[in-house]
Length: 187
Image 1 (tube, rainbow, N blue to C red):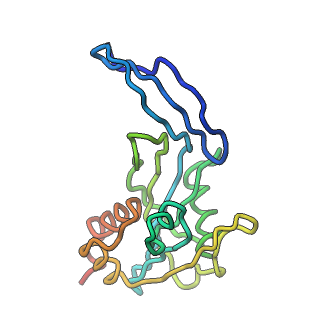
Image 2: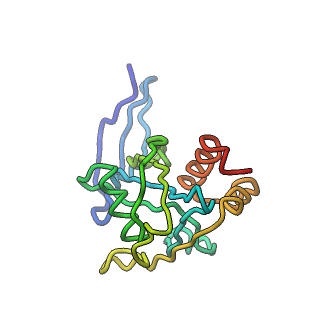
């Protein structure tokens, strides 16, 4: 017998849904688990191969604030809701970074926190040029995201990867994918 959910109780229904689960394990043991249902998401690391730069964002995150840490540098990202991943990430890039993306290069569809969350994040790399910087970014009006846009050199990005300073998981995966897939960008 495979493990299976035998009971589900909704504990919180707001921006996310939070459930208390009863799981019957394959050995017959019944255990309590918790599930954060926050849907799927999409993220992109935009990079300019000519100028050797990348666009990252930062914004207040409750978990990071609670830990007393400074804002993380992150890839542009957003929830899918009902949109297709490629469509949604282009919209998020315009809203968050003021950027029209070039060709999307799929990287992976990851489970960032599989022990507790339903979220899957479709990851992309995408090129951009200065002409594709169409606005200031900052987030969608009315969403109170308070996003700051950062253009950093690829050497600085690599330095953050190598030193362990790039703490956001999706961004770390994307930066490592860029380093592996496009080694010509690092001379």
